[in-house]
Length: 331
Image (tube, rainbow, N blue to C red; front, side, top):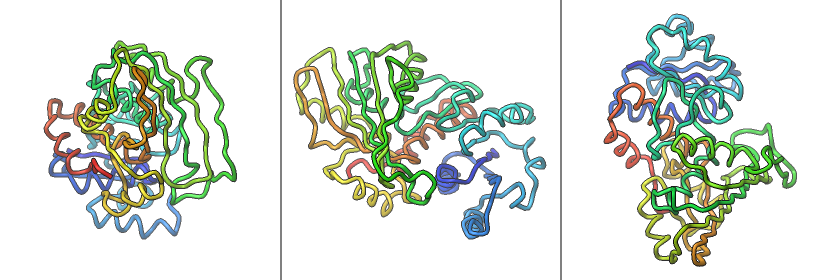
């Protein structure tokens, strides 16, 4: 099995570390990576990727992309926004390609997929954003896997403005995002609704978004109304039953980030959502609280799950093993 990661930024580098570390488990023989633009200061990072067994292609590798594209079985597009959709036409002409995925903003690339929801896989897959993953994980967790139990949901996403390694979008103060839909609000609920519609669910929900002067982790304040009243103990048990969720007693995002830096593969956390478990408000059929969102990490299991379902379907035990190796449940 040959795979290509097209784009070596935050997500691409994290994905490459997971693929190289667990290549035997995933049945991958060769891992190629393409970086369209590399600066002098990127050379050390590219050398490290070569040391992990990644074969670089393009202007900064030993082979041109054209020399390997017809031998690639699957492509992970992790480039800048807009690039994946533009490149899909070229991918469609690759002779051996079984499928591909693109991240975040690339809605037109393919059908949305989030690991753990039982969604069918098609050739082209869109992996929704980290905050959309978090919103869906909240719904999946609080309903104990029965989404028909959700009456309504509201999410307020407090975004960090920039990854710790970048300096392109830093803000000096809180910046409110525009509501793109008069009912759903920001793209988080819009994207979550698109995923749920694939499952035949229409859940009334809204999302809002404020960007903060932080470089650590996103956080989401949620209000979820259920069809049946619950207790705090029931909610806590549901959180513990979701293998993709985590819990923490830490209230500071920088300290949660630090746990990922110390103990997570590549310094990342891979949980879809991390509940601040001792700060939940449970009143009858409503549950309110906060989750911390591990951006760049919490979409990785979906990315790999889509790859496995497309290339070797029915390997659920592989995903369970990978999750067990990557996830830190108690933070």
